[in-house]
Length: 449
Image (cartoon, rainbow, N blue to C red; front, side, top):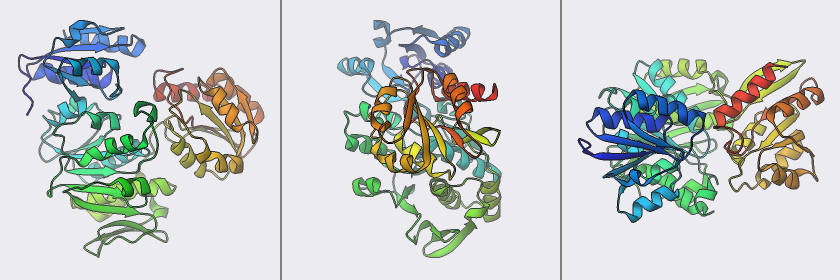
């Protein structure tokens, strides 16, 4: 257990998780000081909250005051290679993630979910299924609550469905979830990992670092990167697969999802009854089914919950249909693999909106699908020229300055049965506060048509 009482503790990042961490530290008798290099509208709003709580803070840059601490807590949005963290290491200041801080004081059971794609959907689905089965469960991490906001509230017989990023895992020490889920691992955030895929994989695999034989590890058997780099683990492992029968785990057989335990059928359901469609969502559902059966939830209640789950905002979210043209918001599609899944989800011709803050994207992965399905690409953001240069010889590409311009142009060019899809493959920070802001701007522009 981390001792916080009467200690100076720096919190890096002043948005949701940073505010949550500062509140938790203060409740436990510590003296938090929150510091953020930005001073945008969201940070300024958080600063007002901190002021009301009488918590010291600084925004618009880090001063030396941030190093007057015995512990530094880092919010999920701060990359592990940030300059402030390098300086703290030089001064031998202990650094942990907000995830590590909150986990130290959470008495409930943690189901930690990581992966390059599908984390938010799976975290939300897991909380929905567990709550529907009568198990009080909080969705936390990048969705729902900041983990540190609810850490002290969760009771021993309750659950946290926790979305976990690679950046958070970089800075764990004793974090030990009762169930860990690895959905998939594909190249992402390589600009923050020295462009080395192996370093990114190592970061994801830290999720089971502290698990023992009393814990569970749920993994995607179809993911070659995961299987090839998998290191020794002590926890009980269960797999899910779209193609290979599992003696302990979930697999797809025709249109049936099967869950076996010790080669014995424990659960089954039809993919026709799932509210989420597409192979990637079948994998997400299988991960949740395994978690539900680990904790002995009732089969019929699981089936009902899987059938009535509502999709996550900004993740292949239906916005509106106008004159037969469907507008879809997939602003959370911040890497190339996310766009691959999005393109696979539609049979109709697509007007695709690509671009933003590039993360070392390799568009070869989606080139075949783009040629097959996309009528035109609208390139936006700081990577617009890269998108144009890669695709313009094979498909129509037009560079646009704003999302509003894109929506107006698409409205004039798309025809009945076409799909206008925002799935940018890039981070949002060149033009927007975050992917939610980007998605809201898109939806607002569509709804003004």
